[in-house]
Image 1 (cartoon, protein in one colour):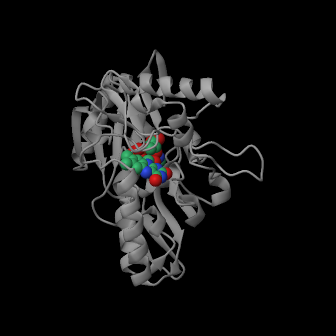
Image 2: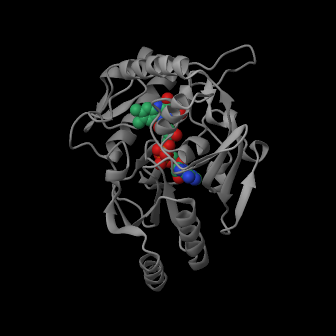
Length: 321
Ligand SMILES: Cc1cc2nc3c(=O)[nH]c(=O)nc-3n(C[C@H](O)[C@H](O)[C@H](O)COP(=O)(O)OP(=O)(O)OC[C@H]3O[C@@H](n4cnc5c(N)ncnc54)[C@H](O)[C@@H]3O)c2cc1C
């Protein structure tokens, strides 16, 4: 990257009192706790900060990557040569209107689910316990128990690659299973307008407790295990009459649960979750193990699994973004 432009960017973030770190280890900002350094990590907490930073980077023509909670990412061991923006806020930034609310994409998704339960707002209890930010959930159309983020979206405010703010409607966003067009266009989600309905706080709390208990019986506790949730997407139906099938079932039948590569292994209760099973685990180990898992399912069922976790950086001489 051009040194003069980078120095101009440093001047900008210092003038605007934005928090940043130089030569930062990205492992600290992903739930896999893997990934090398980036030259600069800028912390944006509010829509205004994010908009200003993205506009400055666009004006300077400096490449960047935006991350939220880092819960769906595998960043390569050699790290990234671009500036990384972390758009995460500890506070919920919500404005409630008649039948909708506007929330900053930096908000934590599970904190938001808890907020809706406490305020008797229906429609979001199923996202209880999903790690990451509202922005990450919109871009990847995160979901659980038949619910997907895109179902609740009225519109999304994004910054496009030219630094312009636009409001996009669901038809422009193209939500699909664990996918949206935002991923391809690299639009930055600033805030989201969500449809809301009235719910009974007591019933919602019972449902939230049930979901959290169910998740903790099947998913790794992130305080103990480093992972990014399901590594592969579930398998799309081949006809309208079929249902999506759990990749975990195929992986388990293909015998992957005992597989290891370097320090990477499989979570004992879920064949679709790769964890750091030893402290010397590298991102490359995870990548190699995932290839072995996919090959096992291909050999046993002739099914090509598709990754849900996003690879960023260089793996096997391929640059992923
Ligand atoms: C234990 C565990 C359980 C999980 N369970 C589920 C589950 O039940 N359902 C499910 O769907 N997922 C699940 N996940 C995966 C993950 O939590 C979701 O994909 C989550 O929505 C990712 O959000 P994030 O903020 O962490 O995004 P990141 O991982 O930080 O980023 C993911 C992608 O989104 C982009 N992005 C993030 N924020 C923005 C933004 N504001 N604007 C533009 N692009 C952005 C990034 O550039 C990147 O391409 C789980 C993960 C873990 C670790």
